[in-house]
Length: 434
Image: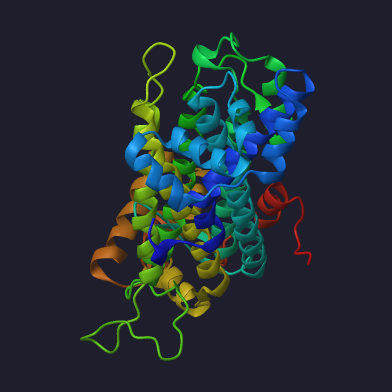
């Protein structure tokens, strides 16, 4: 987590000060619940609420001696609360604080990422409708396939990120659980009503069986979801990188006045932001396997997961937050070149219409195998020897025997693309609404 790839709101969520504030909130709610059911004096809970303060630097100083962060926190808290601090953390264990805090942080991180995704979806929707009928070539294996539209490309990415939003919402629900159940999770030293109070106060659900720690399958699913979203970020970034290649030139990242593309070559306009996203996506996905491996803890608990989560939780959420915001900006300012799209679509004299010719020949009575051979031979001639695919077909007696000039020419007009049907499926309508 470095400033270059961090945004303030998400980064602040993982500061030591924020973490200790959440710990204090957990302990305060727990004390108030204990006071309500008579476990501790009401005056003690009131003292924690009114006088409780913690300081990150002081906790770090104490931890250097205790080598235990929660004990250092409690010691610092006692310095501000006074004698009533002896009632703090009654019947609780460190994991009650640590795991519940992490659930709060990941839930808040999910909220930020959901907002990021909503902003990206809004931009994708606007640009998709703007380019709904902009024809371009569709490619499979990197090779010209058949015509599509640039709007359909963007609609596909919109649908993918809409699924990602749903996944993120589900991951948020799954991670938002609270555990205040004491050692090995049996409530032997603490009343379950305390946990219920803390959970409600923090907007969390109660973990059904905590075994002292919240089960890590929840966290594995959370980070796996981030990994999937990172994959979608990279897929869109990779598409932009391809389209910006000199040989393609159909779209490019916005190039600002005064921007420089190369220290050596003044002509360069490189897709640096999309390339950056490709790298950041790898970092986010690198958190997935460690999160999966954290699931298999020993017995009721161990801390092999702790060091992993202290690193991957801030790194993955901060990086994905930055990546989604950067991607939104790229799409918002993406420069489109419709004329280049038309030129690419027309290369090789209409080879992209080969399937239409194949179907017309079969409908005119030619066997499919024969039709495929005839179309392929003429396509390869246009590909290797140059010339126009349409012209090659018009010179082939096997074709002209079954297709007249008018019918053949009609196959080389603009292809019919079912944009209205697809847009209605994706957006629920065919036209853009502000």
